[in-house]
Length: 341
Image 1 (cartoon, rainbow, N blue to C red):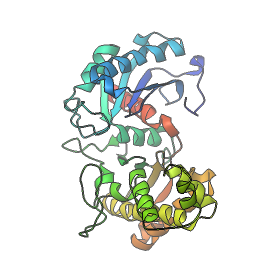
Image 2: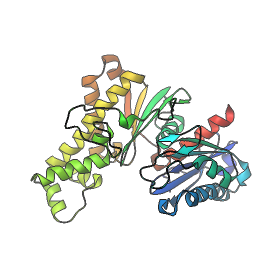
Image 3: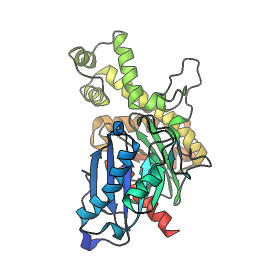
Image 4: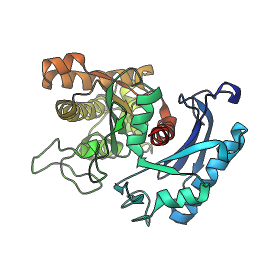
């Protein structure tokens, strides 16, 4: 369920749009009105092991579920947006290679979902969709342009300039997690096999790997004690131990923030956005948590130390606000854009 309150149908401004956010674990779907206000939200397991056609069929049926929850007919939905992990061929509607969806390579996901829901589908990268959601009705709605970085298992990216979603000539635009931040011979490698990219340093996968490395080297403290007692090494555990004062946990999280700041400076110097928004599961509680506040303060400090003064002073860096609904609301927003053109 989304944390965003639902709008009563009587208060909705039509037309209405549906958005679907496909993840490796869950599919999140939203129905919104013309102002991006949420009328219905639905989550279901992806069950990627059942194959892409099964999942495409369930995504298509979700449009009808959303309509029923809101008290409308599916035909009242003007258009559907779909965000999926990449790499993709957006024009052809294909997932080319989805690392967390084995067996989905070269699957025509856009057209199969359209066939199952009976509506035209606008297709986007999932992080780009989330970026548009934050730009439209989230933390970025007061800015003319933004970069969203989604911090989770990997590092996703989305760039919005004006009402333009930066997709690129080959459907690989806004792949911010794969900019290079370390060219040394010992640079870490991301799950795609890229050496030295931001994802290899600022993702949950990277954080857990660094923690295990430090613990194997003999690090002590409350984090080490918790793991020795059987706790799994997770960002949640590391954040908890940082809040409790563990030196290693603090070092690990602030190291992620330092690398993230380095990557953000490169993106700022390339795009000059009005805002950089940090979202995803690994934001350590955001502004509501002392760990989240320390994390973003360290990111900002790195940016101030490295960016041109005007950019360092004027570029806003803040947390996302739409939570797990960002991708589905953004996908619906991109469908709205396509319908209005």
